[in-house]
Image (cartoon, rainbow over all chains, first blue to last red; front, side, top):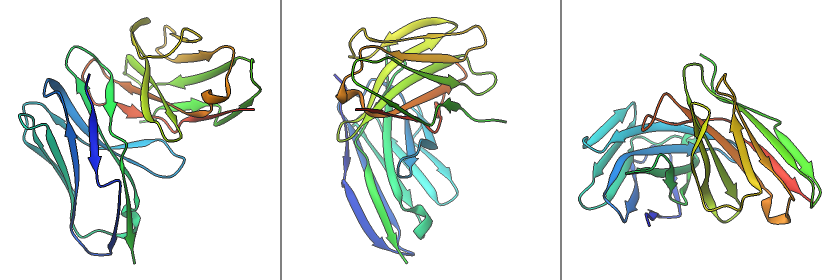
Length: 112
Length: 112
């Protein structure tokens, strides 16, 4: 059974800092990995999708990497801003299934 | 392009009643997914519909059911509501299998 873990559960940083969020998964037989952002009480906004054959994806200040063999992904946020404050969720699409398996998220607070 | 829409935004029901939640996918998307986000439990996969058929379901009792209509919109029905069914229900859609999933804003179901 696939399990996704995100560390840390919460992170508080000053504005302008570069930061890394971590995601690990137990079964490397994945099709892809997605990073999402969730604001309180809201739905999910897709940030980046990495196919299993890819090593990284970039969008603006965000860079996500994937090491499938070790079961790890990182989300790098450059020059953090207060507007980046949200919960960041990592999810994998399991081989043989269409469903996303989610981690419990990292709650990020960027202080002005 | 309009995103995934869900209705209603909020729904308040009493224990034992039935709830119906609705989802309209992004135009051109044929797959619809339902997830439950209960407090403290994280996001859990509920159901996946594609081309009008139920393709997969998560570890939920049969009183959670749904359907997908010819226009690819979907309905989630929860019968015999229990207090622990209180959660944010998120719908997502994708172009086809293993493509990026896009989420709607969710329906907050409260069971009293």
